[in-house]
Image (cartoon, rainbow, N blue to C red; front, side):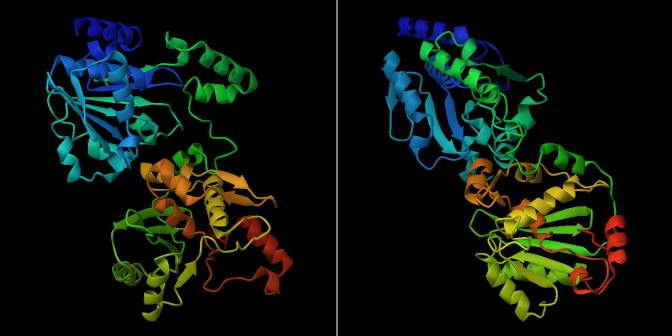
Length: 445
């Protein structure tokens, strides 16, 4: 046993010595492919689990089965080093001598009540941390509360605004260790991997920087809304507006989605209200009270899925002059430019954020991640199209409900006048059209 332990320690020490030697609350390792992070973390934890009794939680954002976890990796390392003191079960790993135990959980399925089972954890290892949502981190971090407990984080950065990067690594405190490790730092990196990396470097320096050097993807042509636009809108510039109140209502489609109301007056979006696990009548009751209390000029609501039921209730209650039902998948108003209404509304949000004078959003990291987390593409006719919501949800760990509610407030142009001015039906002169558009007085998106 001592000989195996010595060999294991040497391999770890050459790459990730601080995992074993430094006392830190959080140990955050990131980098590109083949840096050895997962292997070193697994070896370090197996070694520590032999030396003292530990409860070690191996965590990811989504774990539909044990196969989605690092369970197999740990089993493979146990087999490689012939660590016969470890006993492998279907859903856990235990050390027969020290009493250490490895457990495996998906964070998205844990709420404040269920996650209490992690309170006694000595070390929490978060693998593929680039997928961890801010909500999951906010629940987990205070739960790992045992004296001397540690949180180990391993990730390949995806975007500049990866939630754990922002929360932990962007501005580390004295109790946080942040280390970047790439294939060039791994003495055990196979020669074939080095050849692949060098080939990638010669063909695409940007891909090489992301895949092999651990740099975040540049928010370039694939992103609809840039981080800079959203951050600028978080800067306080507007505290009130006389523009008509528009409410966007995104109704939850599935059990883990939220029903979200967005409040916007022209250039000032000032509030989001979210609800979870409500039926159609409950959402309609809340909408009824908000309409009576705030008297909005218009309520645009998603009527795909459960939204249709809410719309019908509000229609029966006499709100037909205020509410408008919108299908995200329906034809765009400008069908030549946009693949569907969803792409059109989201692009209107982008244009609103980029416009001058500056617009205002409530500072909200979930909203930031949703707005900047959507990729764009173009169909065969060159029309703007957005990636599917399932892909966004997989990446964010949730549906972009707040961003969709904001997008709904841009479903149709709203004018300051009580009645819309129809430019194309001869109701105003060409000179008046030019003056209005130049000064931007009437249309207040």
